[in-house]
Image (cartoon, rainbow, N blue to C red; front, top):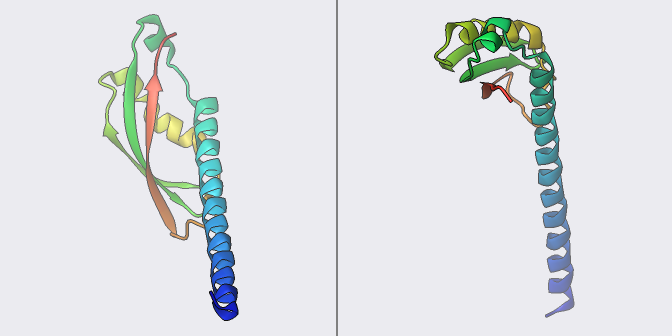
Length: 123
């Protein structure tokens, strides 16, 4: 290998390492943001008393669109729980969790849409 080629190779390797490090940092920021959303939902999700009394459990999937500041701009229940008492809780939960933590700058969309799984399960 010539000296010039070695310099070029080492320079490209350094650039590649920096780019890879930046990608991992961005992924870490996004993962941290996702964990913060899960934490907010877990803190503010309520199990309706009537569902507890009747031992009703259920899962729902909600598509949420948020603005850059984390405010929930729109939501749609994609999959109902199958129980009215739990389904009525979803819009109330959306009000309680808005605004969500703002997305990291790496996510450049003006509004972001994602699917949030929700579960009401007795232990």
